[in-house]
Structure formats: C-alpha cells, structure tokens
Image 1 (spheres, rainbow, N blue to C red):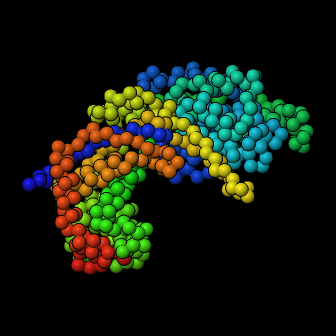
Image 2 (image 1 turned 135 degrees about the vertical axis):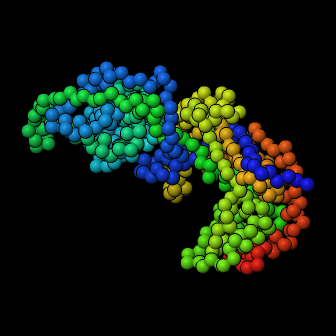
Image 3 (image 1 turned 90 degrees about the vertical axis):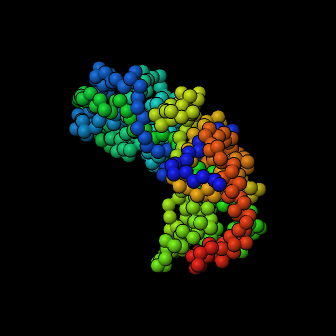
Length: 473
C-alpha cells in the first residue's frame, strides 16, 4: 500500500540552459523595438563595501553641476539619485541634441525615442556605465566629444548603491526626469548668442546655484529595490507540469489524434486541462458544486494537481505549489540552505548573464515582410532552481501525476521561456531532491489511468468529467 503523507512533500530540480533563454516582459510596452527579459522588483541587499555613501561624494557631484537659477527650485525638489539622473540625461542632450538631433535621436519624435530607450536601458542595466552604453547604442549616436569625458565618467563611476538608486529613479520617473533635463539643456543653450538668435530669443547668461542634498538614508543605502531578471514560475508550471501532464493523459487515452478542439473532446475540456479554462460569463453555479468538484478531482488526479474551472465553478485549489529562482548573487538569500547555494553561478550577478539578440525576418520575393527585432536573453549555462511542493495528504495518484508530467517534460528535451522553435530555452533538468517512492507513485497513476481508460475517456468526451452532470462544453 502506498503511503499518503500528512506533511508537505518537496521535489527540487536544477535546470541548466543549453541555449539562450528568451522570456519577454509583457509589462514593458513601448516603441523601442527592443523587448526586455521578464523582470520583477525585489529587495537586493548591498555588501558593506558598497553601502556607504560619503557626503563628500554627494557634495562634489552637485558642485560640478551648478543649476541655472530659473530651475533651481525645480531641481531642489529632487532626491540626489533623481538629480544624478537629470544630470546624466542633460549630458546626453548636450552632446547629441544639436540641430535636428543625431542618429535615431533626431526629428520630432526624438524625445519619445529617448524616453523609451532610457527606461528600457535602466531596466536592463546594473550600472550607469552599462546604461550609457545601451542608450548610445540603441539611439545610434557616435562617441561624445573628448571634453565630456571627465564630467561623464564622474557620473558613471559614482558608488554602486547610488547607481542602483539612479537606475530605479529612471525606471519609475523617466518622463519627468527627461522633462527637467530638457529644460536645463534648453536654458543652457539660451546662453549662446547664436542659438538664441536662431530661436528668436534674447541670449541671457543666468547665475548658477549649487544645490545641497542630505546624506542618503541609511535604510536606502543598505539595500535597494531592483528590477531583477526572473523566469516566471507561472510559465514554468505550465511548461513543466500542466502541458506535459495534459499531453500524456490524452495520449494514454487515445484522444490526441485530431487538432485541439476538432476531435471528440470539447474545446472547453481541453482548455481546462491546458490552461485552466474559463468560467462562462453569467453562468449560474449548480447547488452541488462541492460534490461535483470532489468527483472530478477523484476521477482526474491531474486536475487535482493543477486545478481548473468548469463552465460555472472552480474545482478547487491546486495541490501543487511551485517556486523558482535564477541561480545568481542577487538571489543568494533565497537560495541559502539549498544545493544551489554552492553552485559557481550563485557567485555571479544576474546582470552579467544577460545578453542582447537581434534577429531579422527577411523580406519575401516581393519585398514585403522584413522585420528586425531585438530582445534580451539569458545566456546559455544559466541555471534555475525550481521547487515543486505537494500539499499535505495529497492522493498517491496525484503525486504520481506530478512525477509523470515532469519526467515526460524532461524526456522530451524540455524548454523554458519562449522561442523554442528558433532554438531558445532548451535545457537539461537534474533532480536535486526526489521522493524515494516517486517511481511507485508514478506507476500507480499510470495503472489507474489504464484501468479506468474507458470511463475517463467518456467523461472527457461528454464533458461530465465523470461527475453526474455536464460541467464543461
């Protein structure tokens, strides 16, 4: 007899990318033609060597960039990281905003392009140097003049914690920072007799004021909220468990001969297994939802594992709980105590593992269809530590459905992220923790499916899911 455990059961896998991973961030929508890798905010603690920001550093920076008196009140309202962001953008404008602009930074839309690429660069960069390089590359501007080297490098080599805070400010407040930088840049240009005359304005040299900023708060300098690249647990759950589990079950029952939704199984039933399904608008729940949900979960352990909804009700919470972390220095706290904590990749910054890829779709013979797309990727060799947990008292067949789905995914050259058709996201998965009875659980699940195949097939085709009523159409 197979034991039902009264406590949580954990499985752990290490996924190692054999090819670069493409995993776009749906929250970043702009016209930069560059798609960011998926990111989530998290608190990243700074080493003590990076945490201290000497007041002298702040004072020296603001002294090097006195502000025209007309905009002093505006700049005084900024934090020091925001002020640095404004100075950095103003430095870019001073170098490249001449005439109608330079490179891609030209014409009426140049500031819109600057905003989009500045924000994307700040999201994708770990340092201000990297941001500057990305910004110049994406806007296709030439190298700046030699006279700008020293003031620019002073900004790009500020203490790391200041740089992180500046990047965060640019991600959140890029539009207002660009506006202030543009005002400062325009005010400075009006000091030129030639520019003022061309603009129909009177040249005027304004007095300058050196601002002062208080020391950065100790709580702010010891940690920073950073946009950290991450592989979505939701996507892993689908790719590693839900989809392979669905394909395995329907394959064992001989129901994968036709295209999805065109075979004997109603489209709503396939959707329930594939992506959880949808409750129909205005649907009225039957009075016996608890009993129906229990019957469905007992008949189909895979739905007990991953959950789903019928046309009118939810069958209940999933038995599977998942978490995943990229193996990197930024996730050291989360990986502590796991086998992944001692891996070489755990000593590397995730930002050093990011790369940029440009792909071209060639035009057809009639000259149509060409497209150039750039996007961020996670480099080959990067690793993901995944934990798959089963809640207490999980049915042995449900336990077996998990093991069978993951093993099916592993044997089919598992992929993560998107772009597998173009060679992205292929990985190998190694078990770091696996239950001693995993194979017995899997065998019990497969034997149960085989023994009840006619009943299970009928429940899928009729939409009853082995309950007393038609629940999915």
